[in-house]
Length: 365
Image (tube, rainbow, N blue to C red; front, side):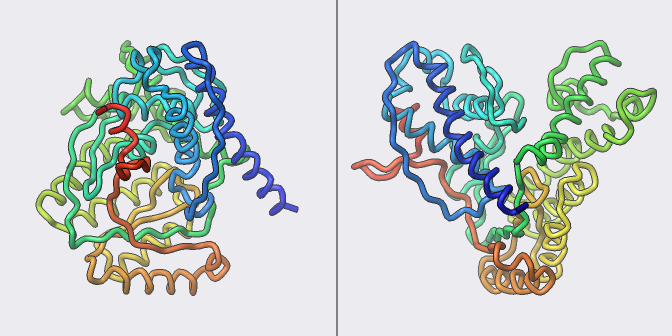
């Protein structure tokens, strides 16, 4: 009965995402043009609930089909609100979370309160590159080449990162804790900043002991939300992990990269509370098997993890990693998946001229 209910919930979600996109497009652009309907057929090899942004990719696939058939990018409403690939990623994230974007009014969304990180990567990533973006708002910072002799090995744990009604509260908790931390900071400082990122820019170079203390005492927030821990995790990513990852890539130092991403994993487990036991086991076993480092990714609560290693050892490592996991969690063997990956281009559209990135077709023509 429980399995049947879960399958039905996934079926409902598969309908909600395309419907939400179609309704939002009609609401935002239907006054400019008479929109044509689109028949969409799609297939995917991505495991369901793997934490690899499958729901966002589904919604964006639907948008691409609707936008191209109706030439939305030629409308005055589109051109005045969406100027480039970053804008489009932020808009599509707002479709998903229900928020308005510039002069494009919001709607119901799909119930997940996330940002535009997934959408930015899915649209704008470049082959052979790791791209650095700042968020809230989204700003492109740098492209750094991925060394050709390094490999990414991805593992789906088989624990589905569900976003059904029962799981949404946990999924949205990390965002809610960040919002509460900003509210407390504004109340104590008299400022009107909108995000942890804005606070970091305002207080760059200044330590946070007073603020962190305020977040944890004087009934500033429920103690069980551990707002200081949430802020420390953000600062670790902002001030330490990201700079270390960039420096290790520029220097070609795989060991340093591995240590940085492993530290990020531990911080997520400690402060975001989103690392499932299976994913944590995969992280530790990857290190024991010789990976330079490994970290869970996505929203967590199941999902996937990536490890970094030398490409000449990657296939052997992946096989050993999968074998060890199946031995430790035999009940997950049928659902888990292990594969090699490399930085790839964003969503591409096939035409008579060959494949082109969707954002290039819209904004460079």
